[in-house]
Length: 113
Length: 109
Image (tube, rainbow over all chains, first blue to last red; front, side):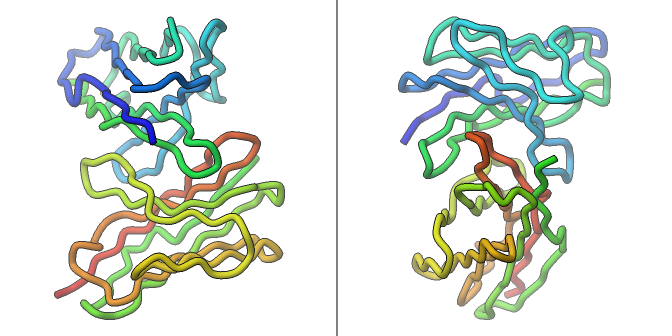
């Protein structure tokens, strides 16, 4: 199994500012995933963070809004840029566990005011 | 477009009853199927996974998979109030997880 440490656990931010979320994994993993979970909704994949290359973004998400870093095989950051109240959500990082499951960080609850 | 569909509920069952949660998926090439439980304000946690057609039992939980019908379900026997949560169906396809919208379950004492 993998243990993921994600921080901050929550934050309240002013619109127009940016927040960087960090995820640290206790083992080396090739891929890390960033999800958003809006209130009452399921998980929506934002992007796949690959070490050594640019992140792969899903439809509806762009690098300028959600820049991602992946400096090594155990760490990644997601930045939510130029925030608006619509960005209020839970953001989760995840790593695959082979065929058996996906492991999730504790989540970051973001409120934009 | 790969889709995973769940009845959003809410589903309410009395304590001790069987809760039945259902999920359908669109991609016939999907390889593995998962049920996650998510308490309010918490991250999802794995309950069951299944690869092969048929039933898989783990304690009070049984996962059922029918690939021909593209259908996966989760049965919770002897439901407890602590089972009250949102249950997410997830499908692994092309090395990527696709999640359903979740079914909210309430077990009434």
